[in-house]
Every structure is written in C-alpha cells, then in structure tokens.
Amino acid sequence: MKAIQFDRLGGAEVLKLVETAIPEVRPGTVLVKNHAIGVNFADTLFRQGQYAMAPKLPDTPGFESAGVIEKVGDGVGAELRLGMRVAAIGVQAYAEYSLARASTVIPLPDFVSFEEGAAFPIQVLTAWHLLHSCHQTRAGETVVVHSAAGGVGLSAIQIAKAAGARVIGTVSSESKASLAREYGADEVINYATSDFSAEVMKLTGRRGADLVLDAVGKPTFEKGLACLAPMGHLVLYGRAGGPPEPLNVFRLFEKSTKVSGFMLNQAHTGAERWRRGIDDSFRLMKEGKLRLLIGKTFPLANAAEAHRFMESRASVGKLILKP
Ligand SMILES: NC(=O)c1ccc[n+]([C@@H]2O[C@H](COP(=O)([O-])OP(=O)(O)OC[C@H]3O[C@@H](n4cnc5c(N)ncnc54)[C@H](OP(=O)(O)O)[C@@H]3O)[C@@H](O)[C@H]2O)c1
Image 1 (cartoon, rainbow, N blue to C red):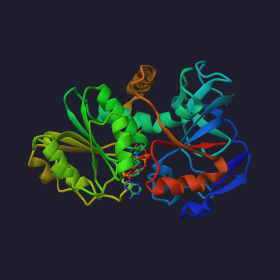
Image 2: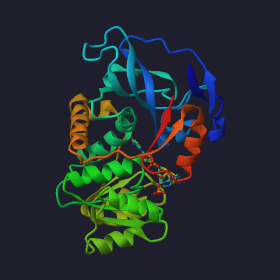
Image 3: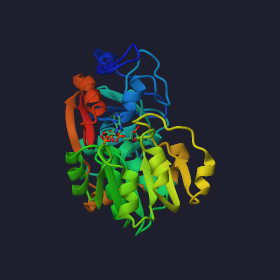
C-alpha cells in the first residue's frame, strides 16, 4: 500500500510517499481502507518530535481517517462489521489502510460523507468536550474561541451557539473573520491587528468572558486570563503559537478564575461521556446546526504540501488527504 513516512524529524520536506505492507489486523482492532484522512495541527508537531507522543522512526503521521472496515480482529464486538462505513482515531493514518482499536471506531450515519467523517473524530469531539465536559456551557455565557476559522474553531463556534452562548471569535485575517461570522460567531476580533483582551472587555461591558478556549498558547494565554469574567474559566488545549509562560496560580485569586487543560482521550472522558459527545455532535449535524467545512483536499502523496499550508496559517476548516 501507499503511505507517507518520515525517517527523520524536521520540516514538511521529511514527509515522503513510500510503498509499504498493509498492517496485520490484531486482536481488538479493525483494519480500515481509508477513503479520507484528517490532517490535524498535531500532525505537524508529531513530525517535528514536539507532540505528546514521540514518533518511532521511520514513522507515519496521522491520527484519524474515515473509510470502510476491511478486516475485523479477534475479540471485536458484533457492532463493527466488514464493509461498514466508519471514522476512527488511530495512528499511522496517512496511508491507504490503517488500524484502529475497536473502542475508537465510530460508525458513520448515512448523512455523513467520508470527508466529513475524517473531519469528525478529533476536531469536532475536541470542540464538544471543551464546551460540555471541561466546561458546562450554559445559555447566555460568553465564550471566546481563538483561531476560530480553523478546524476545532469553526466546530466550537457552532457547538457553543447551539448551547445558547454568545461567541467571540479571534482570527488572524479579515477573510477568516468573515468565515467565522458565517459559521455563527457573534463578534470576531482580528488578534493580529488589535488587542483581543481589551476588545473582549469592551464587548462584554467590562465584565469579561465566562470561557476562553485557547490552543494558541504563548501569545494569547496571559491576555486570555486578563479578559476572564469573575469565576471565568480558561481551557488550554494546544500551543500553536508556542507554550505559554508558567502560571503563577495566585493570579487566579484576582477574579476567582480557573485554568484547566484538555487532551482528547476516551480514557479521560470515560466511555459514556465519549458516546454522548459523538451522539450529540451527529445530532447537531443532522439538524443543520453543525456544518463541517472541508477547507482543502490534497492527494495523499501531497501530505507535505498540506502540512506547509496548515503551518502557514492560511488554512481554514478541515484539511483532508485522499488516498
Ligand atoms: N488537546 C487536544 O486534544 C487537541 C485536539 C485537537 C486540536 N488541538 C489543538 O487545537 C488547535 C487547532 O487544531 P486544528 O487541527 O483545528 O488546527 P487549525 O485551527 O485548523 O489550524 C491551526 C490554527 O492555529 C492558529 N495559529 C496561531 N498561531 C499559530 C502559529 N504560530 N502557527 C500556526 N498556526 C497558528 C492559526 O489560526 P489564526 O491564523 O486564525 O491564528 C491556524 O490556522 C491546535 O493548536 C491543536 O494542536 C488540541
């Protein structure tokens, strides 16, 4: 099969198309013939050896895909069958076939395409759990969504709106601002040209935001704390702009605020809440309240180009690789 491999850490140029063996299905896993593969910002960190999970060189990037179950390993329950359309979280997904543990496989409803399926597991479920597991977002709350035109960002805007929140998005360009508005943001701030913290205070009548969703890190963390409302909550779930400075927890006394971290992981949420996130997100999609934007599709062979595009900050919505 064809797969993307890298044998050293580095820039996008280390990603090469290779011919390799189809993985052997193992007990408790299924083999998926991929129709669409999701590109995540995390893949660019993984390629550089800066992700929570270190690559074992030579390695293949990719944490999610959608396709058809080609083989079912021993011990997998009857709910996963040959030929089923599924999305899955796994490893080494930049390939024509990939393995996934049965617990991370998500059967796709008919109204969800393979491209939407590949856009779903990581970005949509991250947005859902940020808003409904890390925080219990309530109607009338003000939520700040950073990098609002990105994959997680556009989902977070819509899931927060569906919960009745007021959403303030931040983005780095005017075209991204229009897109974030189109997907439901009530207000959008260009954080490349203005001080988002001061703007949020102005927009909230100096009260501040109830929730700040921050995956940018260093450039946004301190300013995010400064524009929290009393009892407000900042969730740090990424570091696209570099890791923030260490936090002096006494800062939290000033307005009785809290900071938490989030990593999408079924073991953290528990199986029941994981299921709820999937069902609720599909329901929102069916009701037309959650639209997944496929920003650009690349042939698998052009994975390096997809990484460069994501790192350039020019991408919007989800980037997909097609095997
Ligand atoms: N904790 C978790 O489990 C989890 C799960 C999924 C994603 N994440 C994190 O969530 C964030 C969004 O992920 P995504 O896959 O949906 O990507 P994305 O938002 O589609 O793309 C990344 C965005 O980050 C923003 N950004 C800010 N500073 C940047 C910089 N120095 N270089 C590049 N981009 C920068 C850019 O938006 P602007 O130009 O508008 O600033 C860029 O478009 C990432 O940080 C990712 O690691 C975390």
